[in-house]
Amino acid sequence: MGSLLADRFLIETLIGTGGMASVYRATDTTLGRTVAVKLFRADGGAAEPERQSGEIALLASLNHFALVTLFDAGTATVDGTPRTFIVMELVDGPDLRAHITSGPLPSLEVAVMGADLAEALHYVHEQGIIHRDVKPANVLLSPSGFPGRSMHAKLADFGIARLLDQTRLTATGSLLGTASYLSPEQALGAAIGAPTDVYSLGLVLLECLTGVRAYPGTAVESAMARLQRQPEIPSTLGRDWTEVLTAMTAHDADDRPTAAEASLLLRALATGTEDQAVATLLLPAHGAVDAAPTEVLSADPAPTPKPATTAISRKQTGTAPTPSVRRNRVILWIVLAVLVVTAIVLWALFLAGGDVPPAVPPSYPAIDGTLGTHLEQLQESVNP
Image 1: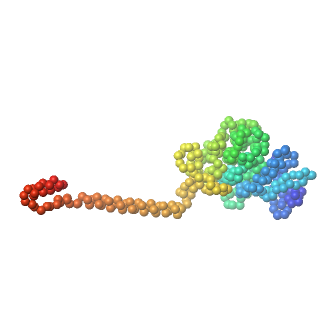
Image 2: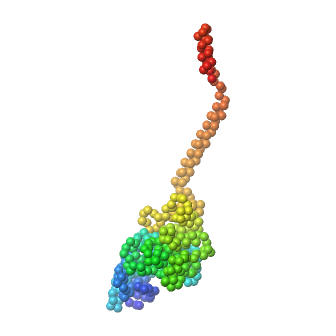
Image 3: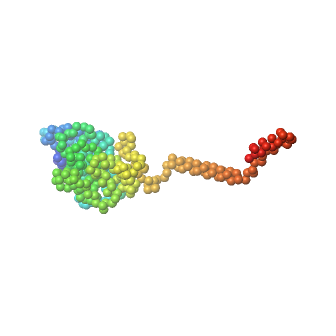
């Protein structure tokens, strides 16, 4: 405390400590702003230097409103020992773990927070990164100055994140992550992917709504419990929350929504349009409805998914029809008018057909003799 790290960052107070590093509140004397300094331990194992440089590279490449921002990184000598450090934005608020201790959180607050975090996960998944340790202690709550919103949630600590399709930094079969929020595939030591983060986020949101961990107990007890049963989702949460959380915490990773789909579902819960959003995004996934798939991800690698207009009707949102819709309506009315006029004309011609006088057979000149007789016979044979 009170020392100057790297001749620039004045260490003030200890914020928290973990297995690999400690986090301090500090002042950037060059820019005059308050920051958080994460100082890694010097007694790590052989994989620590690789993991530390990996975390720095990951954080430096990410930029999203629901992620903690990296400002600087480097190495400094502390008590004669080289120490790696990173400098991040200081989120001046509690973490979600402390926030939950006061009891269950309001449903609207959880839906908004969950949508932001799911969007952040979609962003990092698009960069080929999985977090691997989504838990309440890694969700920092920043005060919000916007009316009607008390806080902003930011996902922190990518210390055990890894790049998809890259060599694992840990030994085969070892576990990384907090036991209470591990996905079934993590508990089994199997290959993991983006659905792992969606599962962990589902458990975090369930705990926010109930104030109780879905899988308490020791690490072994917690890990084994999720292999034996699904998390208990109280019916008092309502049908919509039950459907969303059940999908996010499905045992089979292929049955879970993507982070982008989860964000859309949670955003719909927050805006009160959950019925159609759940029906549009969840039911086709289980084959219950033979309908065209709803587009939920942009083809471009944009960090933020565009809202799915098929998930929320215009009647619910109160938006006006687009110009193309109005143009189609005009064309439809013109076609209908032409069909009506045509039908009237045809009906009139049909009625007029009943007053047509019968055809009068043609008359022929009178001729005497046998020839005249034959002409009369021929005329009678051809008359109608």
